[in-house]
Amino acid sequence: MADDGEHGLWQFRPARRGLQAGDYTASQIEGALGTVLGLDTLLIEDQTYFVAETVEKTGEMRIAGCGGWSRRKTLCGSDQAPGRDAGFLDPGQDAAKIRAIFVHPDFARRGLGSAILAHVEAQAVAAGFRSFEMGSTLTGVPLYRLKGYVAMETFGIALPNGDSLPVVRMTKNPNSEAE
Image 1: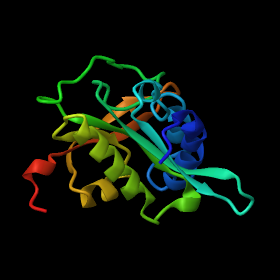
Image 2 (image 1 turned 120 degrees about the vertical axis):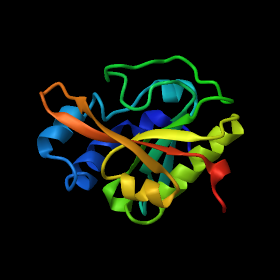
Image 3 (image 1 turned 90 degrees about the vertical axis):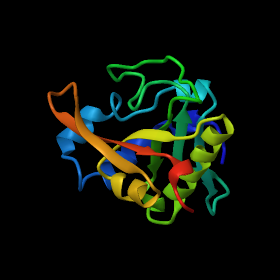
Image 4 (image 1 turned 180 degrees about the horizontal axis):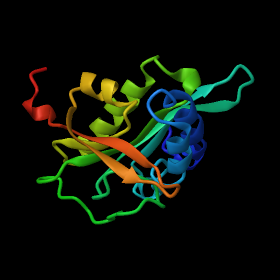
């Protein structure tokens, strides 16, 4: 997986509009794009954001998906999201934040989201973290449950257009699983 998150910026709009239309209204999606649903560039700065690329028949590279993890306190949201906390987590006490995993609709349901999740979890473990936490979209919840995450609470994030976006806080402690 390439680690150049700048190329992943385009990823959010098609993934949100295509794959999440069954879980969110058009107004929620549009209100969240660029604020709640967008890239936190600290992931790029911290080198914890990755893209998965494929080679087209033309020989050009195409981004199929992206995702990352964070050693910072912010659970979810872009640079423009309210309530950001760029403070650092303690790997011995805190859960790494799994962040911004998206798959382009053309590559959905092929295991790419699972591969990105496994990659970012492994990177967080290599950095000393022993558990994970995320703010999942409703669309992502079934996948994350299959991968051992537990839903802790659902909360709404206020959007600039007056709507609210439901998000599910999920956690995973791999050390407590029998694998």
